[in-house]
Length: 165
Image 1 (cartoon, rainbow, N blue to C red):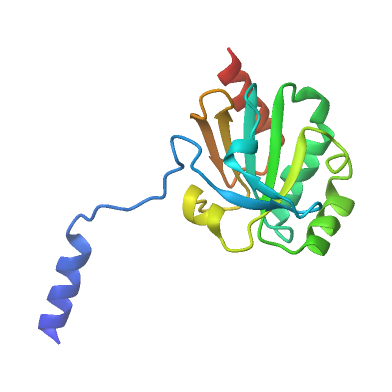
Image 2 (image 1 turned 90 degrees about the vertical axis):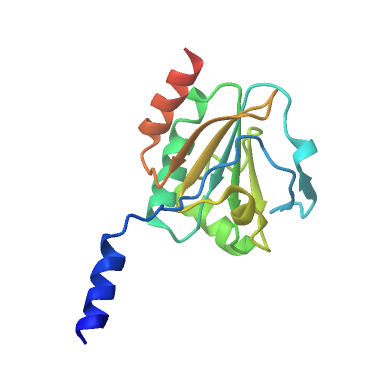
């Protein structure tokens, strides 16, 4: 028993390198599906100007609901930004999310809802919490900022203001 305890204590005291997920520095190639049209959605379909924000969310997540509602309420303030709400949830859950928390998002031309049936987005972007927002430059596809687990739209607005300066 003393040997086991000694090994356990030694193991706990040895510094270990923590592995943390990192957002991709460039938008990786992907092939997903638009929720409402069922059409294929690929990296090549992204806009060439402005900012791109991927919002990985879960329809039942209260933090995601708060962020979705915040984005919907502040949509007019997000100029030259294309939002992609990416989820693994079925269409009826996405519709419920929109109807209950973010009605202004669905008809807006700068907002698209994307279905990630097979977890491709998760494997490529490696979110660790929901919502997980990835802000990319549309022209270069370079990552500008990653916000993981943030539910306050004001934090997103501050991040965008810092990027635009």
